[in-house]
Image 1 (spheres, rainbow, N blue to C red):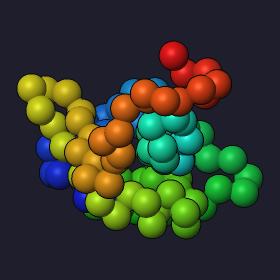
Image 2: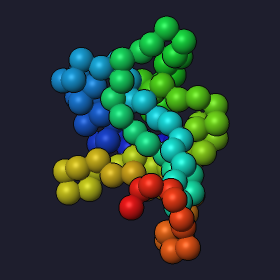
Image 3: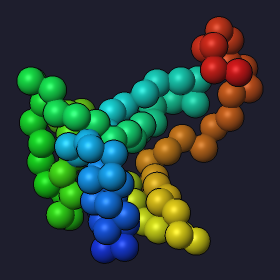
Image 4: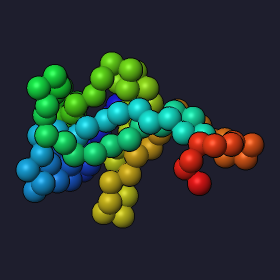
Amino acid sequence: MRITEEAQSLLKESIKANNADALYVQIENSCHGESLSFALAMKEEDDTIMTIDNVPVIIDLVALKRAEEVTILVQNGQLLVDDQGASQDGCSGCSGCGSH
């Protein structure tokens, strides 16, 4: 995962403003396949905070591997996740995933 300098500033400001400890990254599964989910979080007892491009991040090894192709950047003043590994498939043919 890469976090641009501009995104680093916004993320660190958001973490501080929300009294959080870190950016939390996890894998979510849906009929679109595997994707990464991002949130601000407080550190729990079993969490390890690592620093990625000067930003504190809570992420497990599976999500870290998946995040290798991700860049967090700022576009038009807002954070944007550029995920080169994201599935481009639609939900057609999916049944019962519950996300519709």
